[in-house]
Length: 180
Length: 167
Image (cartoon, rainbow over all chains, first blue to last red; front, side, top):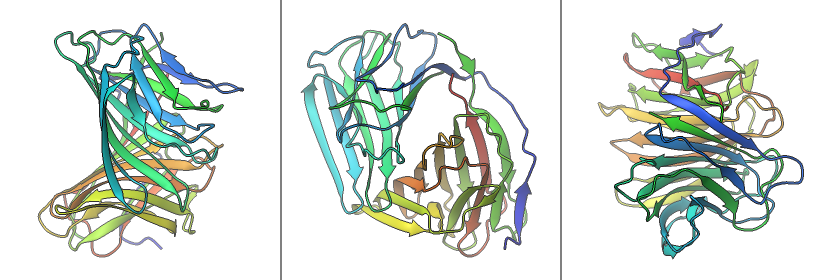
């Protein structure tokens, strides 16, 4: 029984600010997808955010590449918890950035991720990406905070997301947003 | 490439007085993709705000679980909670240090998967943490309650719920 409280019913307030804009969403159809792409990304925002809700066919990480660059121009650091221990790691001279850590593969337990791509259109500096990611299966699970560096001063105009192995399952969706 | 402004404030609740121990967001519109709850709280005693969600009424069964990564100033660790009656991500320390937390309710209105809540909590006099929480139900979420485990919220505590709509 709830006694002292604040009750909000009939919520209907809407006050869009135009500072956070949905750019594009990709939802995987039947048969799955080996990658997900965002192309022709406008340069009119300050930052990008990708919100993911994914299921994977195979346990493994998720990766991110920019502008079709698969050279050894990426590095990453990560900190994760598996329910028992906290662990950290890093990698240099990688051919892709790190989107997510080890994915769960239960279709009812999606892998949720929020990725911020900072100052993506700035041509004076390399690009930094950070992700909060996790899934929990009531007795198993994984939560991670990571960052990746793309060593390029090019403005980001396209993004490709790929699973380490296997495919993204049907109904997986990744939504790209622009932040002013 | 279609685009549309989003990240819409749905409602803000600001605590007044000293007898509030429950915050309720009900009749949450189903027209967004994700919800984001931003909380900034003070409390009379150290306590978590227990979060429960549901459809029509909150689920009080043991259908919540979590995997948590934390650092408390001297060590980093990870813990797991299973078969819980709620999930805890907002910890007010009962002193003058404001607790802040951001909780993302991912794909909250879909009816095909369990619901995943990603959260980040900053409790400046105790710890920082990131959590992933699952509510084992395929029902869309249209009600969220936050109930202090003990004591009361202090006047000025705020809770704002936002909606994000994917193109």
